[in-house]
Length: 152
Image (cartoon, rainbow, N blue to C red; front, top):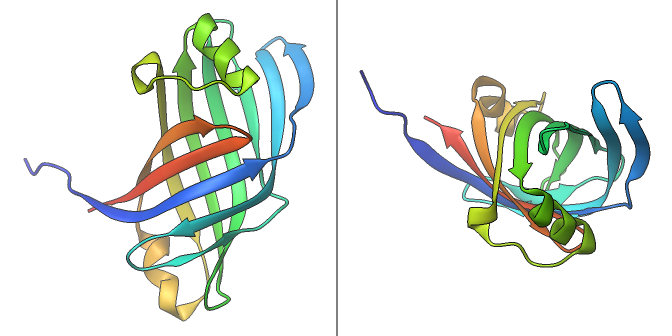
């Protein structure tokens, strides 16, 4: 069986609005984070993350966060790309408290991975419609950053 290969797709940094705290629901603590702005850059594409997307985040009682993200990327050559991803962000209660305060958290204190997929009609980026990506997430003050790799 072949081993998966990961090709660098882009690095992305996203600034988020303060969360809308829906609060404790039967499924967990629902929080909605809207995108304020962002940028991405990689070997085959670069551009900005447009405002209006967001993460319909659910923090479960076991301190595991489920990401449900949708947004639009605009490339340097004005192509629009719809991006969606699910993900897992798991941390101890102590690490979550640091994250919400905006304090630094060591990588070994959390697990934060996503599975992006893309849709576009832009001829130069049609290849994105046929890939699955993997994102490695990191909390940063005021937002998140990702290293995104195409699964090859």
